[in-house]
Length: 190
Image (cartoon, rainbow, N blue to C red):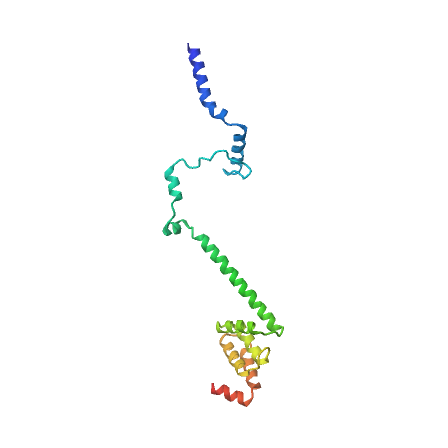
């Protein structure tokens, strides 16, 4: 009788334990292997025949599906994504502005000064960019692309001395010496 009970229990236990193993076919075994190799994700070429049971707890599903408030987003750091995009956009803008500035300087050096170059130079001169002040003073002194204006050139070189531009004081003196008596009197009148 002990042998019969032992045999019966071992068969029942064997059926219960092996029921899951027998249920898995080769296809399911393959999917489990692929899933374990890909850290739980199945690639597109492996088709699921039934929907996976990811969440068994309905509270967890409801918690994930509800939208986060602004405070929760800030706590979780979700706005870092927007901040990274803003940084990248700002970095691209600065890089484009620097490339445009270098192009303006090349055009001025080649003797080609159009309204685009003058607008950029004047904008940067208003921002007290030392390089723009010096280039603009040189343009007005030489008359490259514009009518020569020694008064403007002198005033720009004078402004350059406050911006610590090397040789600005000496250039202002040279421009002043090159002025006609009329220009010197107009300069004193201003």
